[in-house]
Image (tube, rainbow, N blue to C red; front, side, top):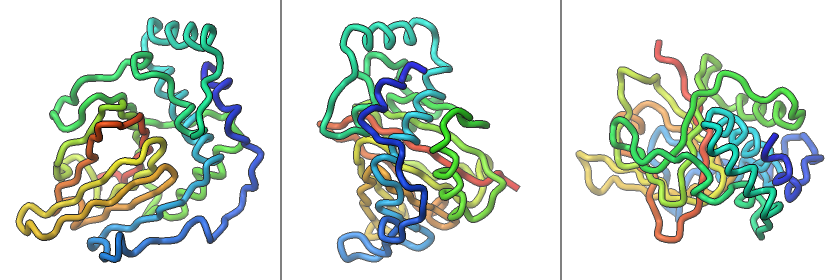
Amino acid sequence: MLLSPLIRGCRTSFTKRWQSSSHILSGSIGGRPLPPDFTFYPSFFGVEEQCVLLKAALRKLDSMENSRFRRRRKEYLRVSGTPSADDPVQALFLPDELYDFQEGHFDGVIKHYREMHVSSWPDDMPDLRPLLDRLHQILPDQDIQTHILHLASNGEILPHVDNLEASGSWILGVSLGDQRMLRLENPTAPTERFEIPLPSGSVYLQRDSIRYNYQHSILRKPDGRQRLSIMIRDRKA
């Protein structure tokens, strides 16, 4: 329950109903059509909903870290109190040095990150389940696996094409925290390059050709802050 003091900046007694105005499906970026097999919801979750999702995801990640980092976070909160910020979502993140970020992924694609697979979510957060249920309504199918990826302020994902042997035909990403740029580029057609800003609360869905014919990356930025993604993908048949 380490993160519970930090949620006070996010009121969780929000109305649990589908508001069509906040789930506008974007078919273009800057007037340019999105690439095929790419679906984008720029404001799927509101700020209060983002806080609930981020609190749950951070709790899962924090629980798997060693006791040294857990003690350091507890001591930081005891001495410093609840962080304040104009952005209540970003305020849920503690300083980078209080997390056990890994320098590089085994395949060299992800830099400065924490990650884990998720088979269950906290059952003591009543506001969480409706958000996950709403997200599941836009999934192509329900035979899924879920993954949390937390990038440090200087974290990044280098250009890569998904491994056909390790994943299915689609992947959905929920962006929480710092806005980063998603770059999609076709190695065989240099003019087919897209840069899509991923604001906190946005959701994207990549399917088929966009996953296996385009390289995708999350760009590092000089003044970057932490971001966390909830990634859902289908199981390989």
